[in-house]
Image 1 (cartoon, rainbow, N blue to C red):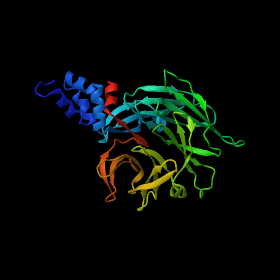
Image 2: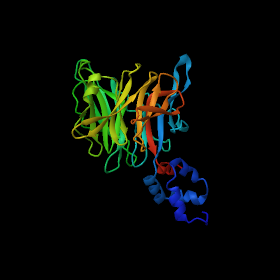
Image 3: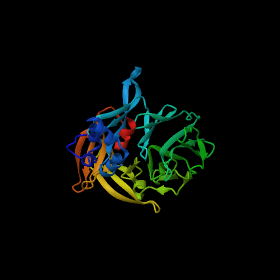
Image 4: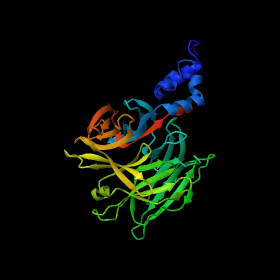
Length: 367
C-alpha cells in the first residue's frame, strides 16, 4: 500500500468505486487486493454503491443439420452490451432470483433442470425428475426468510380429458448437499390453468407464480398469482391481476421491479398507438395494483421488459425486443414520456431475458 496516503483514506475512496472498477483495482497490488477482499470493506462497498446490473439472456450457438439450432448458451451482458460471462449449453432460461448468497437461475435442457450460480457459472443442482408422461412443469427458486435457506419449487400439472386436472408441489432445499424433493400441499387451484414459465418471481421470501385460466371464455378475465411462503412452505392468499389487464386478455409478464411485484402489459402492438403499461403491486394484503408507467412502443418493438427504476428522476431502464436481429436497452423518462437509446445488445437472443444484481461480494466469492 502506498505510504503517502493513509490506508483508511484509500479504503474510504475505493468503497465508493463502481463494482466493475473495484474489481479492476484488486489487480493493482497485493495490498489493494487484500483491502478490497476484506469482509468489512465489501460490506461498506455494498452499502454505498449500486450493484452491477447484468442482463441474462439465452443465445443460440451454432446450427445443426436441417437448419435447426444446436444448443442454447446463457449470456451475462453488461448494460453497455459487452459479454461478461457465457455459460455453455445451459439451456432455456426459466427464472432468476437474488438473495444473500448472490443471484441464481434455473434453466432447462430437455428433461433436465439446472440451477446455476450466476456469480461463478457453477451448476448447483441438476435434476432429471421431469419425465412423467403428460406432465408439464414450472419452477421457482428463492431464499426463505428469515432462515436464508435456498429452495427450488416445482409445480407439476397433470391433465386428462376424463378427469379434473391435478396439480402437485414439490420442494428441494439446498442444505447439507440434500437432493431430495419433498411433496408439499398442492396449490389452491381447481380449474384447468396455464402457468407462465417466464413469470415466476421471488420477493422477500415469497414465491409468485403467474397463471391464466385456459378454459374460461375469452371475454372473461383469467390472470391470477399464486403465492408460496418459502419459509413455512405454505400457500398464501392468491392475488388477482389488475382489472383492466383482465379485460384486454393480452399476453402479460410478471417481473420484479426494485423489490416490487410488477405486471407488464403490451397493448396495440404493431400500431401507432402501441404502448406497454407497467402495473405495480402496492398492497399485498388487499391485492391493490397501481398503473405506474405507460411506455410508448415503436412499431418495430415487440416486447418491453422493465429492469430497474433508476435513482435519477425515476427513469426506467427497459429491455426492448425488436422485430429484428438486435435487441436494445432503452431508458424511459416519465417526465417527458420519451425513450432514449442506451445500448445495442449482441443479437441472436431469445425473448426470454431477465436481469441480476452482482455486488462486489459475488466477484470476491468467485475468484
